[in-house]
Length: 259
Image 1 (cartoon, rainbow, N blue to C red):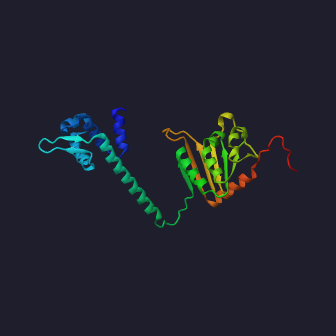
Image 2: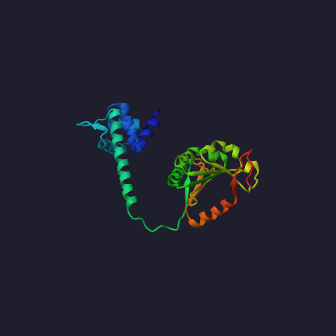
Image 3: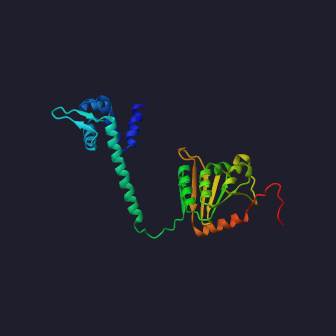
């Protein structure tokens, strides 16, 4: 692992950049004064003193008596164990504090009823919450690739005995989802050029919650999908009307149609 990666990992554990640089420098030097630490850590000399004080308060370095003072880092195993313990305590305090805040009476609900979720990981988490709250029905539509990408979510819905329906114009491309629910085909289809097919995902839960996700690319290239979800009654009822009028079950080959 490179020196920079070590610093990055220490920062991820809660140290500041200066603390990570000074601590890693001391680990390399073994025992050193401020001048040596300044040279190796590449931290401004004026900042080294305050950083050493902070590291000493964390309990991961030791200071000598006498003049000039010398400093040394605790063994990596001991130091990291102390940092981990401090991090666990911070996580517990944050969790307890947030739960306390969440349990307090909320202000009156605002008029905002459409929410944005960015990134596949966050969308997945939102879908998991929606499925966990589902009572009887889950409807999924969109680009076959996106429908298949969240197969574990549909599997979870099936395990909860939720009725799952998959709507697509290409049932063959999602044939693997048949074991998790019924495949239905829209009654009407707008033909688009093959290179202009929308890459989307549509999910409806119990006819009361709607999520619509779309792939996109922005200048950061960090996230590649965004979603909107809502439980607004007027929006959901209107979309339910459109959905109900545009879908029908896929006919199974070989079976006579009912009259």
